[in-house]
Amino acid sequence: MTKEVDDLTINYEEDGLLVVKELDKEILSKGAWTTILFRYQNWDKAKGEYAKEMYTIRRYQKRQGEYTSKSKFNISSREQAEKIIETLQKWLKKNK
Image (cartoon, rainbow, N blue to C red; front, side, top):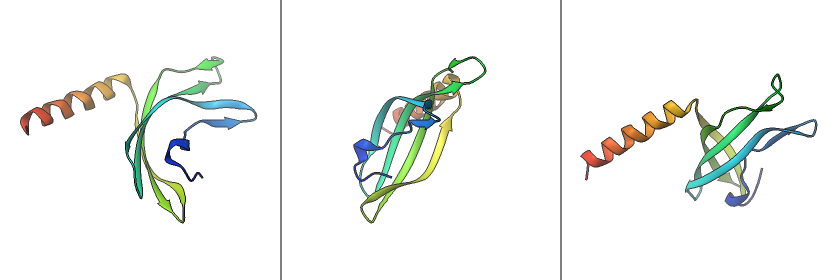
């Protein structure tokens, strides 16, 4: 793994091909437990191109000086992402 939170990535290569391409990331929290929201694309082998954008939230734990992946939640579509945003905004407005 990695020692620095800024170096965490979901880029993944197989046989020299970047099959998971990280497009962006936002570090939501840092510390012994770190949470990062990633925007990414998977390589579609059948089409020979990258598929639609997707999103994932990853949790990492720092132990013995290195970050280890502990959990993830994949947001499967733009519609699901919009529903999560809408719900969080509604809840935040209620609890001001």
